[in-house]
Every structure is written in C-alpha cells, then in structure tokens.
Length: 389
Ligand SMILES: [Fe+2]
Image (cartoon, helix red, strand yellow):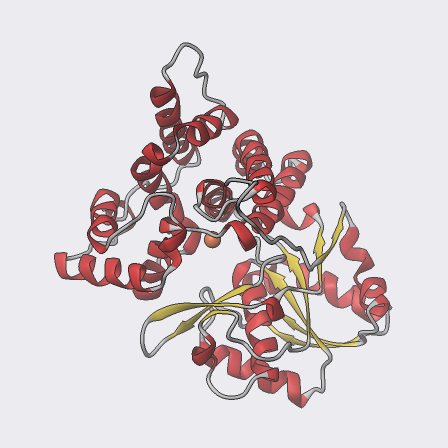
C-alpha cells in the first residue's frame, strides 16, 4: 500500500469484555445495554458441557429472562435460522446471545438479520446488501478460531443448493463480545486444533491479502505471533490458561484483521468444500492453508519471510526467497504437530475431476479469492485443490 496515494477504512464496532471469569458479569453487561429478555443460540455440545447451565444460572441471578435454542448445527442452515427467528418473535426477545463456536454466533447473526429484513436471506448474499440492522447480538465464543465475535460476516448454508453463502454487513457486528478464556478449557483437543488453524488462516490471509492496510497488517502479524507461540501448548493441554488466554485473544485479533483485510483463496475453497462435503471449516482451512501459501509466496517474499519468523523458523543465513518458503514448512509442521490429517483423502474426501471443477468454479464465483495476493483463475483453484487431495 502506498500511503501517499491510497486510502483505507478501519473500524471495530464490537465492545470487547475480556478477562478470566468475565462470563460471571454477563447479567451486569446485558443490563448495562438495557437488555433483559434474550434468546441464547447454542449447540448440543455446549448444552452438555455444563457451560449453558452456568450461563442460565448467571442470567437467573440477574433476573434476566431468557429462552434457549440449543440445536445449532455445524454450518447453520437457512431453515434453522427461520426456527430461531420464530422463537425470538414468540418470546418477544430483545437480543440474541451466540454462545459457542462460529456456528452458534453465526446463527445469532443470521436470526438477527432475519428478524429485521424481509424474505429469504439468500437475497442478501455478498457485501452490504442487508438493508436493516436487527436486534443486538452478544457473542460469547467458546472456541479460539472463528473471530465471528467481532466480524461483520455470517456464513449460512442453503441446503437445497448445498451452498455456503457469506452475508457481509455493518449490521451484523455483535454489539459486545465476552472473551472469557476459561470457556476454552473444556474444548475437545481436535476442535482446539482445527479452530486454531482457522484463526491462523484469518491472520495469514488478511496479512498477505491485496486488501491489507497498515492496521490490519499490525493485527494480523500479532495474531500470527500469538498463534505461533501458543497453539501447540493450548492444543496439548486446554487447561493451560495462559495459552488459552493468548489463543482467545489471537482469534479475536485475527477476526478484527480480516473484517477489513479480508480472507482469500483458502476461504474461497473451504466454503464449497464445507457446503458440499461437510468438511469442518477449520479442517478444510488446515489442509488448504499450506497449499495456498505455497502458491502465493512469490507475490511477496518479505511478508512470507516475516510469517516464517513469527512461526518460529530460524531463517538466518537464508536467501529472502528461501526464508519466505520456510513459512510454508512452518505451517506444514504445525498441522503435523497438531495431529491434523493433512489431505482431503486422509479425511475420507475424494473428489472426481468433475467435482474438482465444480468446487473450483464455485470458489471463483464467490469472489472471496479476489483478495488473494496472487490473482487466481478457476484453473489455479483447481490445481490448488488437486494438491490438497
Ligand atoms: Fe474462517
């Protein structure tokens, strides 16, 4: 970016309440926003883990009325959003709480949009097409990955088309996010690994994207640094509260980075893979990230060298090019250390040549890859997928 010629925008519209044990302040925080009737969106795993029970206890103590929807699914569908909207209206709620990973928060965002905007949400796919701001959203993440607690995006699935769509709008920013690292300590190991890799994908894609600007670069770099230091110890032992705290912050910081810095080819491809083959978002990103980085390295050796250093590679004595390629090695090693199966076929996903073409075309048509540092064609996306098989 040329600061003498170019312009950029940046804003973060979500109030962040960070701290170990801050979940206990949920009632006070809601009252501060004049909210006393809320709908909680969460998933069966959170309901069974005891976290939902804890939240209910806190709300009861604060005399806040609440309704619970605990059937959030991975990749929330438009049908589920319709159900949550109806529940919200039936109980005359004022706000939605997204309690869980990205799917719970995105369900809350989708339902907020559905309450305030007429017709099928599919018509609002894309950037800034949502006319009205809906009821407030309070995000309480229980994974360190999505960044959805601060972003303006919700990713919803149209089951009829087997299609994952992104709705991006200033109206979707949560009003507040409660970041309590204690909520990460019960996260299953496999989920901690792939959601952490999602956060790393946000940080690396936004830092290297052609939409990067000084503020998103600063956020992306710091998120990469935090993830490089803390993802392994966090996955090894989620009760390591220091590592959990740093990962929770890294995830939110990477989210703030990609609101404006955007994500690119990794996310362009992981959406159709999730929509068509139900590959969890973080897993698809873990597989795609090193392959896409290898494709992109030549676009900016300096930036990729910086990533290599922040991920712990010793690049002393190496040429700039060799140092930059070490970033790919670093991510491959990280995936291996986290015990993530590094290919699609190792995760029982096999794509025929026709299916590769369909996924690559869908990824291209979404426009997400427009932010990729190296311009990508459908053919390029197909080659990337072939390497990920
Ligand atoms: Fe993501």
